[in-house]
Length: 361
Image (cartoon, rainbow, N blue to C red; front, side, top):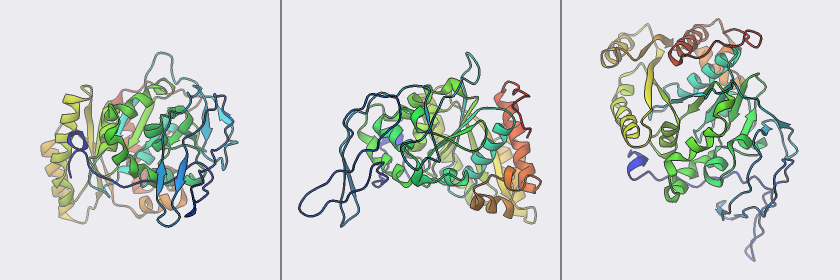
């Protein structure tokens, strides 16, 4: 699978029109009704969306959206555009968030579980955390218990329509933890971004608007090396690479490291690998131990001391819309991710969290 930085990869069209979906008949098209908004912005004519009833496809004609008033966030649980507006204070005066991408082009290695668990634990420790779901599958969004259909804006609107990211931030029911959600429509961004000028910097520029409001920004990357992952790597300062303790998981690591190096040299000189996290470790097999030893040989200074075991509790937690810290904090997986969060705090050199807002890891 080719890196999108040099040629890109093809995806497929998305869905998720924010308006009322009125399908068009053979006689003509009826555009979707634009959503009403309670935000203090200048209203312009929105881009019409047309739906083909026979194929289910969407044709979208883009126009520049109105500027977004900074400091306003829409809540995630709003079923309509009457969502309350929330003002978010800066995390610390003069301080910029540490932006961390969790990336591996192989699927099923624990990226989303790691991202969600770490985000919840850091928020509990008193840090302001923004979770960015950059995976069209939207598993991080579901794992945090959000209804994708109730969201006014998602990452797709930020990357393609120029919607300010502050407007796409969904406030979760967890203190100090916010989310920029993803839906399957984000898959269309892989194709639509190809013709966009400076396509690799779209996410970086969007995050710059809110970087002073958070201590940490975690980006859950899709299992590919396409434009969404390239955007995440261009926006991030650090990369965490989760690797499953199986042989096949090792095959793609070299390609990922090469892609990270290309992004570092051509797009983001400050990008650095924060560490490699071994996941799904099965102590009953010699293979898991051998894989850990092999990774430690190649990344002696980068591998995290924490090794996340294979655990049924980790697999069960997302079905309840919870992280492992909320579902079963004392399980083997819960204790492992708590240790990993402590390592993350140390490696990122985060300031001490306000004790008055901390719930503790």
